[in-house]
Structure formats: structure tokens, C-alpha cells
Image (tube, rainbow, N blue to C red; front, side, top):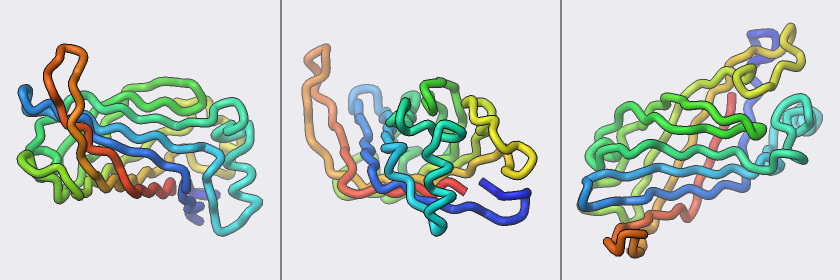
Length: 173
């Protein structure tokens, strides 16, 4: 986010969970990230308090920010590409297209790998309309998910890997 379209207001969420559901039979994965809205920290504590307030993320009423991707080819986790999915902010769900950065995940090796997701969203699309004269409408996202894989049977009885994060970070700008 930019203040008066010049000064960036950077922050980082401390409470993040991320994982990749892998469907080997289909050759696809789904990227998921859940951020605790009240875990946002910023250099200026007053800015962080405002961003967590009802004027922006409304963390008290909407404690989670969630992204669930559409299935993406496993090869794309290594090479990068477009990542479409559903983003929920303040209880408002929108389809967004983000950029999957080239990562260390390989179709045959999902253990201890990392994927990066970047993109921009319009805060007004999610009901964050306060202070439009001084705070830009665009919010930049930068999410890193480092994985550790497990194998779980799916609803259809077919085993699929779930690669969950051991650490992850994001920095809205």
C-alpha cells in the first residue's frame, strides 16, 4: 500500500499457514495460504493498528485472509506462471490472478521446497474504502511457502501429497 501514492507502507504477517495439495494422478497441485489478519506488523505501530482496524482488514471480525488456488500443473511450481484462485479478505471472496514465481518445487520432489506468489489486488474490491484520498487502492502481495510433504488419502481413496509450510511470509506493500 502507498501513502499519498509515494511512501510505501510495508508490513508483514507473522501468523501464516501455507500448503500445497498435490494430486499425482492429475499432475496438479493447489496452493493454499491462510494469514492471521491480527498478526500484521509494520515499522510504525500506529499504521499497523490502523491496518488491522475495521477501516482496513477488520481483523476483529474477519480474523483470516485466505487464498486457495485452482489446480495448477506441477511443472508450473518449478517454472513459474499464472496462478488463479479465490482470495477472501474481510469475508469478501474474489477470483484473482497472481504470479507464481519460479521455485524449487519439482513435480517429483515436493519435500522442503519453496514457492513464491506475488500479485496486486485492489483493496476497494474487498470493501477497504477508507482514506482513499491518502492511501493508494493497490496492495502488493509477496508470499513465500516452504513445504514439508505428507501423503494422505483423498475422499476418493486415492493418495495425494499435501505439502504444508514450515515457515512462510508475506509483505503487503
